[in-house]
Length: 172
Image (tube, rainbow, N blue to C red):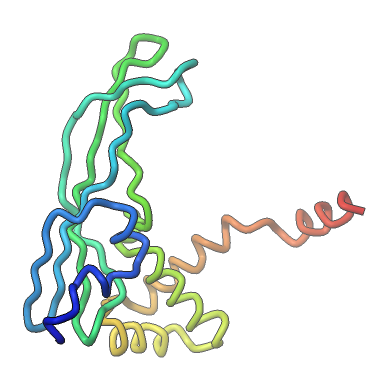
């Protein structure tokens, strides 16, 4: 890799831009980026009438795959922070701070999901070929079955054909 180019200039993923980079470590095969999400002063919570000030509860580090850069695998070490607050019923509740650009349930960045769907749905490549291309081009390790679960999960969030027709009829 050209050492004249700052590594942060190569990181165009939302995860690297919207969170605080606390450390960068480059090896022969991997770029390791340590991230921390932004913590707000107050949060609007569904069980509170007004915004609450949350206090630190605990944290853990999760490893998230990003789209590789210049032939190197990109891995984010993300500090997943849990905060706590007292709700209106005076019960202590904890929640995880949102991490922009990262799908913590899948341990990948939004761009990995976008690229997988582009290859599988828009380019009509099979799931095994999509998994192989993600591995070969971007050093993202996944399986056909994982890609199928990602696709099924996203499809469930979409409206049904009947709902789409109802929405179209409402606009006329």
